[in-house]
Amino acid sequence: MADALSFYAILKEKPKGFPTMAKSSNQKKKLILIRELLLERTDEKHSIQMSEIIKYLNQNDVEADSRSVRSDIELLENMGMDIGRENGYSILSREFELSELKLLIDCVQVSKFITEKKTKELIDKLSHLCSKYEAPELKRQVYSNRIKTTNESVHINLSAIQEAIQHRQSISFKYLQYTINKDMEFRHGGKTYTVNPIALIYSEDNYYLIAREDGGEADKHFRVDKMKNIEVQSVNTWHLRRGRDIDVSKYITENFSMYGGETERVTIQFSNALAGVVIDRFGKDIQIRKTDEKHFIITVSVSISPQFYAWVFGLGEGAKILEPKSVYKGMRKMLKDVHEMYVIKR
Image 1 (spheres, rainbow, N blue to C red):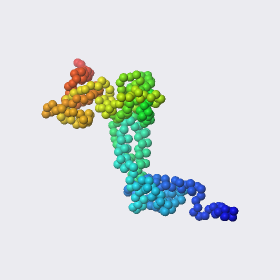
Image 2 (cartoon, one colour):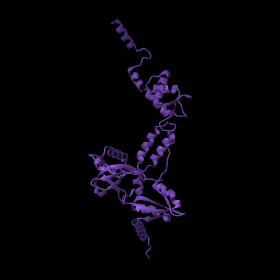
Image 3 (cartoon, one colour):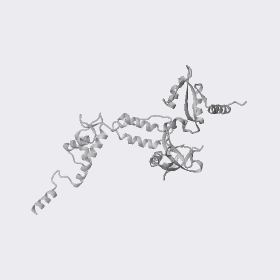
Image 4 (cartoon, rainbow, N blue to C red):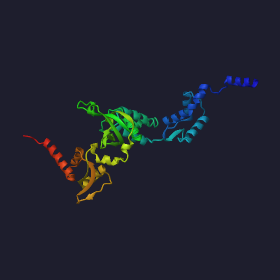
């Protein structure tokens, strides 16, 4: 009994250096604070001294000495952190190098489907992945002629669509379009589309959903930033998609500016100077056949649309559609119709 009372008296006196309940609780965040301090205030060119670490911990109500801090730093190294000890302590390498963060931020800045507000939020988050000394280098501007979307829910739409594809479920949504007053309105009087999603693709600076409408026979694509009120349905649609996997790269190549149409095998003649343009458009796997010293021909599958004809026309005398005759005549008709618009009537 006397021994128990003596032990209680020792606890009650709280000798110097004995942590209080609050201090003891704060010790649990010591490792986290050291990690945050190293990540925020050090890099390959900037280090921090032991005294600064201890001071920072004390400011956050955490008691520390050099021995315990060294032990914590060794633990952080065992957890994978690359910590240098030259002229103090510093982070030598990170999950993302500064050049990689710059690349990611450039992509965010020029991405058309990311709103201005979301762009600023993402850049701020990416800036926290480097030291405070490197962060100002990320506050740069990459100029682009792409007009950013105003739809703040694009990233939410993408997540919902991906969920539906993963779980083989249909989705419903309304589709928007611009008016001449620059306002957005629902297409077809607010019709609710119900589709079976197949794939998400990124083309022409926009995200598109490839899907098939309920009861439809052909695959269609919808711009994700124009989709509104997306709801994932509980219906499993796998039986409607089985055996219908599509070649996404082929789909993008066939559709010019993501305008659909009847797919045809088309033979086109090009001047040799346009070889790079053709390979950029159709890829290096296409078969190029030389016809003479100045020209070559290719045969590719394309969706016939005004945008396809416009692409050929944009190449001037360097490109000519040869086959099939229906596509050749379609090009002639388009040229004739446009010519009639510009005939000067006296």
